[in-house]
Length: 163
Length: 424
Image 1 (cartoon, each protein chain N blue to C red):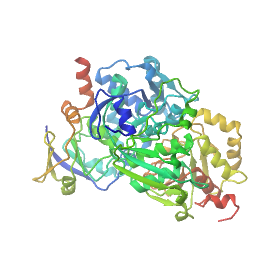
Image 2: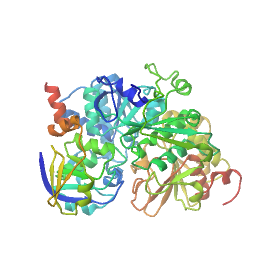
Image 3: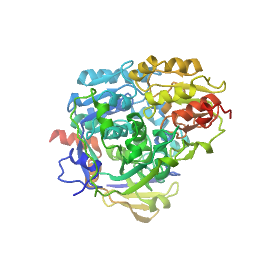
């Protein structure tokens, strides 16, 4: 799958899911209603940069802390196409994979990207282009590639139930 | 082939012939748990998967604890749905007045046994490592898959072995041991790894203190944090459970990604300063920081051990007039025991507020959140910006002795100074 979009840069390392989606709004379970609270504890103005051409670019160890899937569900509801970062915390990365949001660990691409940079991702090969420069993301295990190709854990499980 | 404890537990729960760090395998769960926040989101996903029934109702447990009691109509609705879904599926449900904070509760109620795998819709599911269970936190879509199929995908973690050497001194608790570990590893140092706690210092810890240590493994980024089962674990499990369990240890020649030694003889009470759990300093370096609220509770440190430590400091003193204090026993059982011991009376008399079991203000859900410009000392596990209310508030993490002493002084002090009567 090829993803092309515009970089929305979330600067800094070790950013937690509490600032990405504060606990007070965890009483919401509908993704559409989660949208207004994404980035609320960090930088609410980042929401203005989202859209269905957005590729989020992060620093290192992004998404530490809570398992709240609200962060990724809200990103998806805003139309975010993919996430490229220097590295990710475990549960955040899982949540992206499970919800079918391509997530790539690529230090060089994350360093190269500026707000608004053109980003092109080949999810199959892990090639990440930033403003025409190509970088190679960390390899993704086979089962995770399979989940990604299915569009996430929900369609993957649905196929499994049908089989 | 030699294996670590984490590898042995996972190997016993997969179809694979062998497992090595980095292998991605499907892992069977012995127990699947979710709460009023992660559960309803998981039910939606399970429905989208086309699954109508859970894989095994006897292995599924739901706990209403985050917004308990409901802070508003929306959270009340989530709790109603959690109960209705549980009844419909025939799974165990712990609701208002009948349970408490999920992780303390599941250990208490005998759901957690050594060698088991527990998938929880909450990042602090790693707490179960205190009883040598591979407890690991997952998001709601993962939980939906666990509910439907009884398994989740998992990259086999490497193991970081942590030796607690020597003997801890007075006013040092399990909290300080794990803060020392996170201070060493950093908040990402345990990524893709399981922590394993060994050594005489680990063996000397009570189960309550092991819960505090294992609980914060995730704050180093780890998948779980394991204490090999021993006589203390066996004694704790006695009468709580009839689930079969196994005693495994890492093979002597198992490979560890890293070995870390923490010398307890050198360790003093610690404080994690805002805004990261890895921002750890000795309490001596935090003395004098003004405190607006003290919060004792949560899934890491809301046990009888913590309440007794609090009482030890608070007895004969009052909460400072410029400071608020909230005490939250982690479960109904602990609440009653503390009541019978007279601890709740002591707290209230001192000017503290005693809450019923809840996750409450720990995650900013309600029940005592912070205003802009305020600073708290808490026995909780996260001090991220805005975690407990305003993004302009600050949270310092510490053990119950340090927290209780701060409540009396209205600022961070050495707990020893309170007991010795030295004014600070």
